[in-house]
Image (tube, rainbow, N blue to C red; front, top):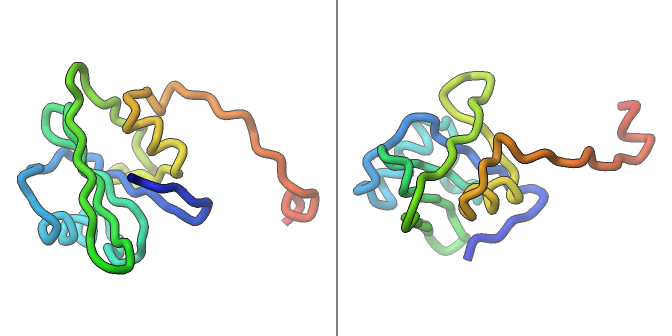
Length: 121
């Protein structure tokens, strides 16, 4: 089961990948395409060509884990692009929505409250 924490970062590859890749191939993509460290504990998300399959790679302190999901009907909704155009970053709640079949781009989030010390910084 995937878990979410406030420090968790989720990096999503914009281009589809060959999902026949295993742990090692996805690690190389995390480094080259997403410019991330696969050992960081952050999640790296890759879509299949038809957008009906998704793989999430992460390190859990004892080894790499690959979460794989194929939708029985429909397609995953690709979130909006990040500033660099090659990848984007989500938080744990957005990843849960994405894996649940929600369109993350059309979801609206209520602005979070911040202490006044953080608002002025």
